[in-house]
Image (cartoon, rainbow, N blue to C red; front, side):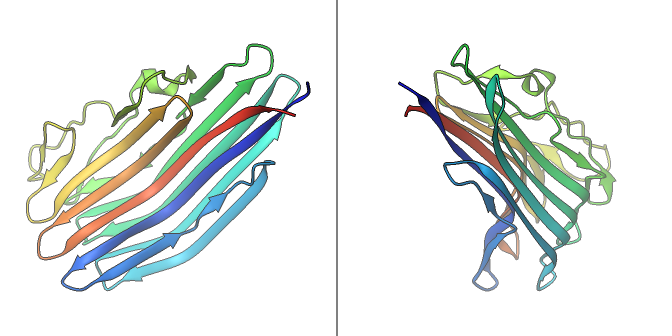
Length: 222
């Protein structure tokens, strides 16, 4: 019986919700998604500002699903440029990249986050280096168990930035909130990465996410 492949990929630029000092739902900015047949989807948003709480100069996403002789390939990327959150968290560029493959010969899935990165990420004006752990950059098979964790390597904060690393790997910034970097979810049929998640816990409350990508896909009988 002939087999076919049902693609799935989703990428988003920025989304979230502000709950204080006012209620504001941040609609998903620059969303791209694939139909089951694969193909190519692109979205881009230029310039967004929410009452000086956050802003970005552009957000763009790409999702692609295609077939080669050896495999079915899926790619999802999300890029946010010129990000500014309350003038405390800034980044020239935040990029999430997730590539997955289904081998026709072995019928095995593999995925990699290689290419995901931050450029000039600063917290309270101080440069913060966040790198994806090397073992997460290699193509790896889907997990048999559900795993949720940060794929960021240990973060080394500048001594004078006034922040601290929490037990769950977040950076706590006094009178701002918690910053989570490169969070990954891997299940037997799904993988995703969210490069930046912010839980605001000061005079301004709410949550924001920037640069997220996910893929899966299933081989099905024709």
